[in-house]
Length: 294
Image (cartoon, rainbow, N blue to C red; front, side):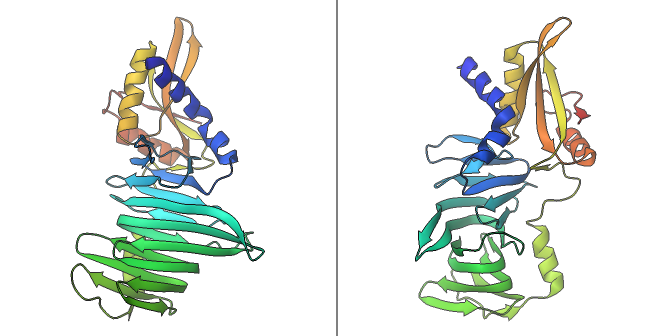
């Protein structure tokens, strides 16, 4: 078991480039840890940069966490802290000679944003359905924010249009900067205009924060968390980080005294982000003096 775990840790070194090269429906672009992916088999792993996500995967974010995902057409999916997002019907297919990207996104809990990319090279169509607890929204090209919590479900249309359904009620939202709230176990409120101030407050809930130690695709900085003298010691730290929702790697190196095992987290986009992550993890999970490098 230790050998298998160690091989898995080594494979994390190449995961970003290898996974990103595969035919991907959804790829992980950014992570403000802790965050995890749970597969249909029940296996759970920390959410890692470049990871390819598939049907039946579920994304979990912890306190203070964010996840940034990219669909095959370039659309971005953002998930806020303490969120759960289930993925299904992911694909890209031909319908009436047109390329159509499909996705079913179930926001079980937390704040969520879906944004199409204006400069995307994709010239096909989208058939994306977002379920925010009790509300279902059918998306074409749009910018949509939503949230599911214990008190209410919210859909906020920032740009574009969506078809909205709750129970037997169905209608189209086509006025930018409008929102719809459905309190739990109560009738929904009428669609209303949202103020820029309120939208700004909601948007913060899904944006990766600057200086929070977030990982980004293409990031060149790394944090070395420990240098262990044995494979077992390195795996102990690696497993604790993994369980806590941090996608660490193990790199074996030769030293003057023999073999050492370096445990690190890569894909930080700047020194500021690397130092923030180092400060966040210092003194926990057996991490004494993390070191930042490029």
